[in-house]
Amino acid sequence: MFSDELSKIVDSENQAEEILRRAKAQCKGIVDEAEAKADDILDEANQKSKSTYDRLINEGKERSDAMYEEYLEGVAKECQVMTAGAEMHLNETAQFIVERIVKANVHS
Image (cartoon, rainbow, N blue to C red; front, side, top):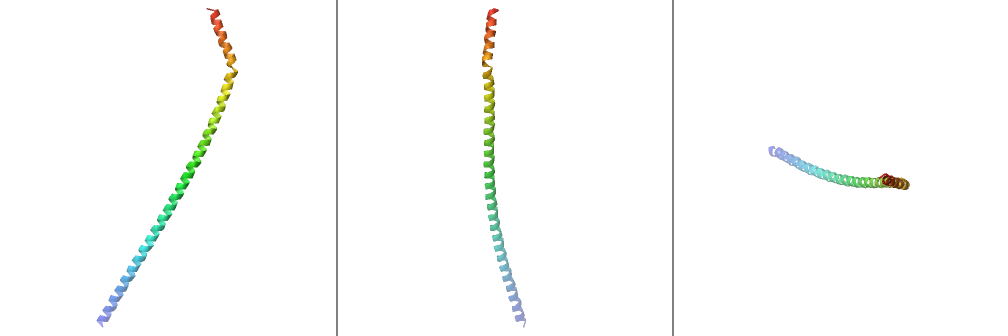
C-alpha cells in the first residue's frame, strides 16, 4: 500500500516537472517571438525615421536653394538700379570734374 502511494506521488511529481518543463519551453517561445516582433518594429521605425529625415532634408535644401536664388535676383535688381542711377549721373559727374580741372588750371 505504501508503495502504491509512493508510486502515485512520484508519478505526480514527474507530471508536475513535465508541466513545468513545457511551461518554461512555451514561455521561452513566447519571449523569443516577442523579441523578434520588437526587432521588426524597431527596424520599421528606423526605416520610417530615416525616410522622414531624408525627405525633410531634401525639402529644406530645396527651400533654401529657392530662397537663395530669390535673394540673388533681388540683389541683381538692386545692382541694376544702382548702375542705372550712376550712369544717369555719369555725364554730369564728368562735366563737374572737367570744370574743376579747368578752373584749377585757370587759377594757377
